[in-house]
Length: 260
Length: 121
Image (cartoon, rainbow over all chains, first blue to last red; front, side, top):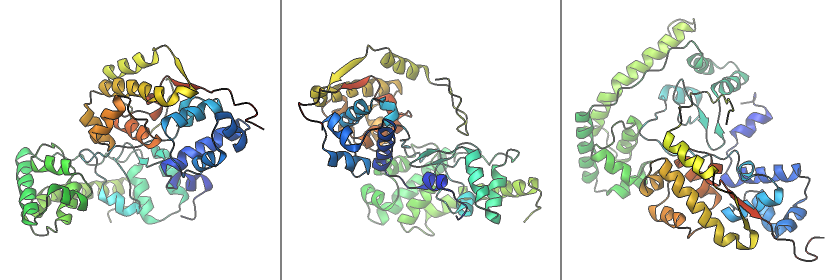
């Protein structure tokens, strides 16, 4: 990580929503050439409150945001720039574990070879991501990621969604295991990274392309090693794993470093 | 918006229903709210935007609530103008509707009250 510059530290900082907004306020206030006191007086706010907002200790309400925009004489869009929030997409995204392990990052919504994003700052293009890896040095794992991201790398394996009969059986197995453990959906949802509503969808086989990872996490939360559910998961996971390994081999071969 | 942003992935064609919703908000005559009336007027105007944009995405209140990680009753309160959203709620709703938070704030502007006599030094 020593290769990181100030800008990277800034990108990788775990901003809270309030801090991100506060940074916008400070930036625009300084651009407008205003002191904290002056801005506060202009909009009829106590300076202490403004200071709290600027440090991100207070998340403002909409009317405060609009008043701030008026006081700074900027558009609302300028004031709320750089703020995103990504809804969870359990169904459609799955981080390729190979990449997650190699990079050591919790890579969110990594869908090779397409988009890449760092929450909560926003999006980062592939080029930017590659640059950052290059700056970080010549770690062999990082080389692998760079290869996987290179423009002539073959597309990552596209998983077929599991068929309906598998979904029904897995849903039934999940329900049986949950009931065996004496848990309600809500109790299970508090142990696994998902919601009761999504668990219900899985059990009723209503979600047509669920991420296998969700099943794995739920199975883990239910302490379900060796259960019917675990067997069913493995049945789908094994060919996917093989496809991924095949793909990584192909990537390395194209990168000209032979089979490893 | 003709910005050619390189986001590292292809931006799909926008849905015509969504475009229609956004255009209808954009073409609304601008209204500026007096600062003294902000707490009453702002939630009502935000409610209008939220309803139009949510329908533009073809989402139900439940659907939007689910994606934004809010409850349906919160959305319902917001859409009836009974509640002023906080910044984090706005950004979450922006994410749920797959848009920038600032689209949700279209047409909302405040006219500052004149400072009270001797208020600023």
